[in-house]
Length: 118
Image (cartoon, rainbow, N blue to C red; front, top):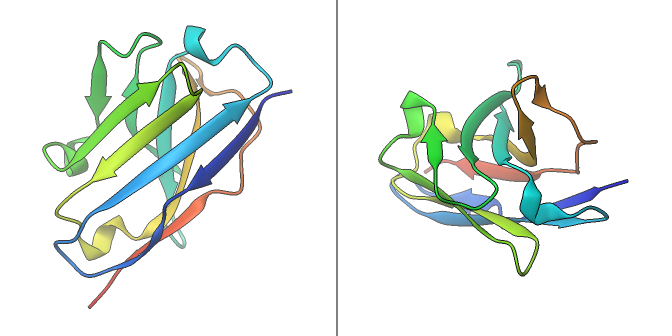
């Protein structure tokens, strides 16, 4: 069973930056596409960024394009989300998971809270 551990969240002012990390264990991480998801209070969890297994291709939801960058280090079984120019509407709990055409398929980790506020 894969285990996902997200970290790097915190409180940041609008316009600030954070770098999230997600460490995976228990599976061969490097063969799977991965995604970063977020869930804001009262809203459904949404996919914000995804990356192919080898890291050569990425995709983003329109609301974060040009501000967020997803990357991965398969040697460390870790996927990252660099978040710049943060906005209050980015406030959410952020999670990572394996990404498939049917959506996320692994058990969720605890997530990491990102709060953007002045």
